[in-house]
Length: 114
Image 1 (cartoon, rainbow, N blue to C red):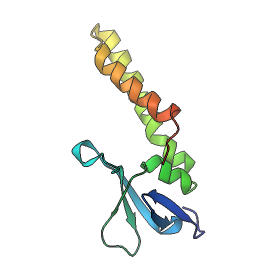
Image 2: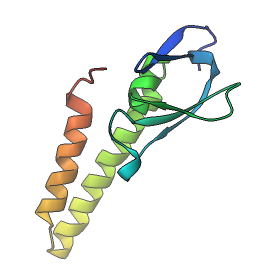
Image 3: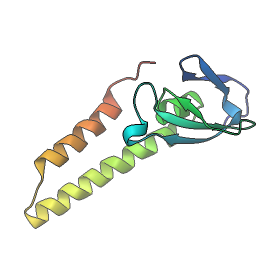
C-alpha cells in the first residue's frame, strides 16, 4: 500500500488515510444495499467502517489497481470454465450464465459514481 498519508473517500463523507487501511471485505447478500458496499478495517479503529464504495474503487484510490482487477479476472475465468464444462456435458444453463455474464460486464464497463 502507498506510504503516503493521502485521504481516500469511503463514501457518505467518510475518509481514511490510505496507509492506514489494512483490510477490505465486500458485503454480500442482505448485508449489502442502501449505501452499504464494503467493510473497511482501519488501523487504530477497533470496528470496521461500512463504506458506500466498492472494494475495487477503494483499492484503485489507494493505488492498488492490480489488486482491484484481480477479482474481476477470477470471475471471468470461472465463468469461462463453467461455460466450457456445461457445453461439454451438453447442459448449458443460459439463465445462470447470462446473469453472471451481465454482472461481470457491469463490473468492468460501467464507471462507478460515488
